[in-house]
Image (cartoon, rainbow, N blue to C red; front, side, top):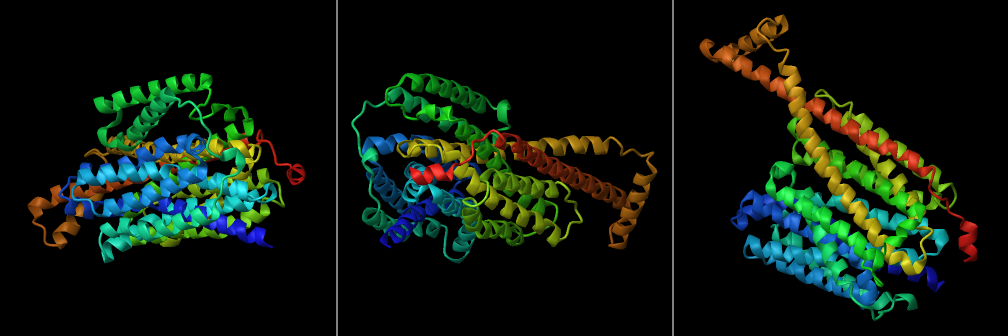
Length: 512
């Protein structure tokens, strides 16, 4: 009877710090304005507090399996939680923007290893037949963080101050530390081993992933490759990652064991995860822009549209964890992807006349779809990985998950800007003084302005301004439709890959 209780205590012990890290990925976004004002920093300087965290986090994630072998998994996890808690305290005490960015880098370094470590510990603690439930627990943390982070950050900043966005991590970190010390132990195959450090692999991985994350995070603000900085960062990122792959092929103790990709199901699973996160994060960023820019929603009302999707995922994830052991996981995964793609397709049908229920329903469908996708997908992808290699596999898996989200945000926002310009040009081509519809609309606008007391000599100029504003909004709306349609298409394409993923043999797992 003690074994099930121990299993759930372990799950709580590893998910508490992981949830703290995932929430911190997005919790600062809504506090940027307050941070900027308090520390007398510009907008660009303040956003470095986000970029620094994401870049440091992305660099450490793929190293976490190797670091676990180098220092011992429990020892490394304890160090990560301790450093994250301390750096959170220091972030709250930051005296200028430079100190905040430095402490956020420490936070990212500390938090990078916690996600893959927690997932590998969960999968080792639960028997293979219950991996679906283990992945459901991890999925709850993955879905809860991005949704609740901005809500918590906004509430804490408005009611207390931005410092408490970081201070709240301290008691959670202390509790997590004691729970890990008491309940987590290393199996014999994961105890600390002496090995030669792959310095070249370490350098190439750190430089490559760090520069890539900076390109994705800062590229749009710098107008991508028209910026010399982005060009050089891209060249360095690609070169470093190519050298990294070459070095790792011949390293005796590689930082990331790329032989994991010999498992075809694991490789396909990473591709599917990349594009599912591409859809999720792309739509989460684009949808609030549509609601606030075109529909006039406040930040609170935008959050009310996003929240039901997260609630839907939280409800369906445990159900999916049970179903994945009773039904064909590939079937569940296909249903989840279809629902996720369909939800984004519904968003591509939005208009400027959409009511609250119309914009809310696709988010509910997406929440259910994501919940149905996560559990069977992670179970299928990692089910054939031996326990002793699970730390390496989950580090790769989480890296591709994070990069998928980063690419989704970067590409979606870029396409939105480009398609807005495209539609604006196409729409204005038809606006000529000989167009009877334009003359009628102008006459109506001028009458409305004069009725409001505008001088007749200024009414024509004002009327043209109102018409141009309508054109801009319509161009913006068409661009939103294009982006959502693109996200839907990339998601539906993943259905083809499911066919080639190897299914789970639960009978074999039970005998093992």
